[in-house]
Amino acid sequence: EVLPRSVPPERIVDFLREEINRDNYIVVELKRPSGNEKGYWIHEQLIFGYSDTDRVFYGSALDNKTGSFVEIRISYETLLSYYFDSYTYFQAPENKSEYIYWSRSNFLISRMRLREDYVPHGWVYDMLQNIVIEADGKAYTAVQYDGDRNVIGENKMYTGAACILAAEQHMEKFLHDRHFIEKDTDIEYNDLFGQLSYHLAKGFYKLYEHRKMILNSLRCLYTLAEIPAYNAEGNVAEYAQCCKDMDIFYKKALKFHKLRDWSILEELKQNFSGQYKKEHRILNQLVLEIKDIWHSSQLQELI
Image (cartoon, rainbow, N blue to C red; front, side, top):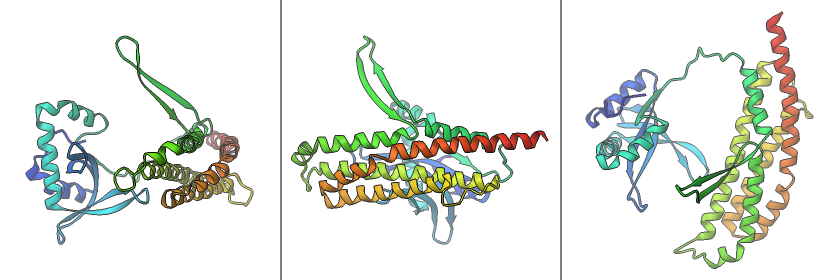
């Protein structure tokens, strides 16, 4: 981390170039103009390269249309402007609460580097624990109270495979509220359908992306452990099919968003209904298989 306010605006461009030259990645909080109610938007920005010829920094940003991160270019002048606004904003006493809020997760500037020599001991066990958490998906309800014990907020959160159940409930609510959504939708002024269906499709993309990360980790595990798991009947191959299924579900949700055809959502909900049972079975089979892998690795260390 970089100490707050230790890099004044006039130093930010040179500071970023110097850190990149040291093979560091930089995350910096930037205050950008926005069309929202506040008129600005504060968010972290990853910087991983630069070009003095083009006078730009290279970073990444989320493409809301695809739900994936893409490379972007930010000019030296633009980044300096955004950083200056951020630096002065967080210095103001009236913004103390926001300064504390943003400092909870990371400093206003953070630097990081990949360690090529890092070899975690017990990585098979860590992988096993993560698959167990995924298989044993749960739903939690977080309740917030005021000083008189009145409930002022209630949030339901899902973990692991239980997120599939959350997606099912999301679709059920969407279909249940169809009349109100259509009634309150004005494509030109207040496209409620467009907003809700977009978030539905985005949620399916996150489910797909999460499964792809798990699949890549499983393939890494089985490759390093030298276990032939890529036959047609293998658990890894079955989980790979779950990823393909979720990609199809995502595309159907996106089709629903674009075409505004409620029959697509009804079909999606019907096709999606067996996904939880399927993934729960495969994940628990993987848990048993990885337990054997871990146990064998422990025996080899003892011999």
